[in-house]
Image 1 (cartoon, rainbow, N blue to C red):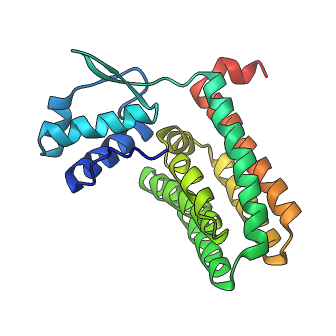
Image 2: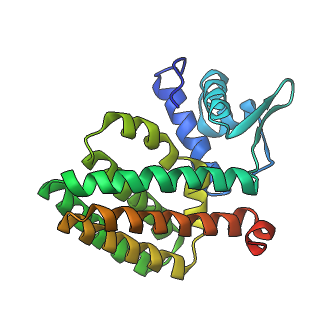
Length: 227
């Protein structure tokens, strides 16, 4: 959910993006304490935009603020992971069904181009390529979301796609996980090309459920093993 008090300043936005990105890549892993002074120094900015960025992250449940100590990166419990991905499966499944009925030829072309670039990038297999693949994955889901033409859905789901947990899970994907993502994305595109809302919804749900299992495996191995 958007924070109405979030200051639309470039420094605060930059600080937010930098901190969220470092959380996603595990440079700032769960449990670590974030210090305004050191973060500001590393980014070459004052402490004020860093403070505002930490407040926004706290409002999203990604860090915990504690007086005189700073902000601590939140650890995700198995229940929280399951709840978030469960929500994504329901909402993104619905999004895929609506998009399949409304998607334009131009949007399909964008999805085709995204898929081709994604396949090229993951073939490289190095760390920078993995970062780029994560961006392309988010772009794919954003294109599908935009194809619905539903601003309420865009607002509801847009923030979830950028959560550090989602990105961090993707960055930890195995080669097989990345290949599975390609397969699912390709099947989703083909269902949309046919205008098959039922298949698009089903495949998207399967896709998100697979991501949930990966998140549980990487974030809470014991919970994943007990399923």
